[in-house]
Amino acid sequence: MTIELFSAADFAAPEPETRRLVLANDADPREADLTGIDVVELQFPRFVDGRAFSQAFLLRRRLGFAGQIRATGDVLIDQLVQMARSGFTQAVLRADQDLGHGSRLLTHYPAFYQGDAVQPAPLFTRSTAAA
Image (cartoon, rainbow, N blue to C red; front, top):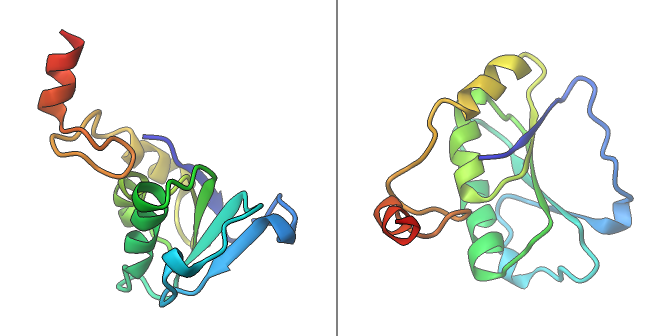
């Protein structure tokens, strides 16, 4: 599970604005033009608003978006594992969040039984296929 972490206190987007699409959390990603887009930035206006998880899943699984999906806004380390499983590749953590602790949380679970946006096959089928 790989997700790159940044602190909102010192984050500046490295890509040109023309290569980044910022989606409001009430926008339907299926209606977005992803042509020439390297990064889709999804908003978490409040910690309790999880619509960006659905947007990320749609981008990865249904639309096949292969670029970066970045979480911004009220992003807490508590959300990181689910973000990685939903298809996010970057998270800009709220300034008061500990980057080191967030990184450790991402390595806490080596695998999940059920499939997700990144690894659609459930664990039991992956174990059988590897044998």
